[in-house]
Image (cartoon, rainbow, N blue to C red; front, side):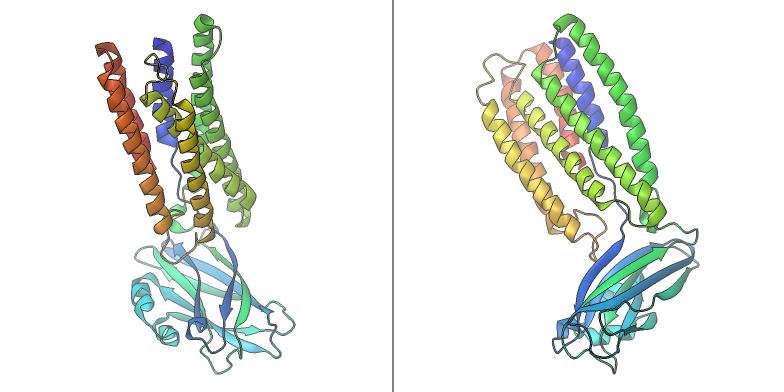
Length: 363
């Protein structure tokens, strides 16, 4: 039992360090609705990109997909510096926002739903890195007669040709480092499992649950690394792997949270504490489903002008509330087990509780 407790404590301590998500870069292909009589369709935000000191470049092209324009029309691509963006967002009339732009391009929308020519531009940063915001406006003389669904493709590069925004330039390196650390830890963990089996002959169910959580986490980090490796070369990556990686990491967190709360209730530590196991797992599973749904919603809105992380905004607040609820549940369960424990078990519970709370508040 003592070896089992030590294994759980060491593994949980390591998973606390690598269970959190790293900020990610992005590539933008999407659709916006521009034109017509409604004020909200006069101006639409497209994307943003953080450039390091030096000369950065960007390119964008558009095409009308529904309805197709009957003759060539022009819309404007507006580029805004981060120092002006907060003021831009406070302007109520959309066409007045264009007066605050730093760069303007005219984009000709061809007929028959064809792509426009690529619009290329250069932005130079001399003193410090800057974030530049890109928007499409229909405020010129050749306005679209009706609300038109426009598809866009946007690309941006740093001076050295990389396609990571300045605040995310180490994302690939961090993913590679995590995979290496997880591989090293997996070797150490397997060694502990073999040593434990020499005396116990088989692995406890708790160890199996912990092993599954670690394996799913490792798999998610590998998928994420593959995605960002491709992104580094083509600017798009493998979106399916990116989504699967996030799901794997969330499932790993749900499994770990379930395990932590179960042990906090006294499972494997105190006799007669196994009756409520099914209820605990069911409740944590429901919270896990909420996490996955929120993560999916965060993916949909990951390039909003105000967002620098997938879980920023309302989605992040809901996830924080869930994590706080889990932490409170864990604290209460640990308190009840503490009151029924002896001095030796309390020494473990103190370390276990500290590491577990770090985990709950680390994401």
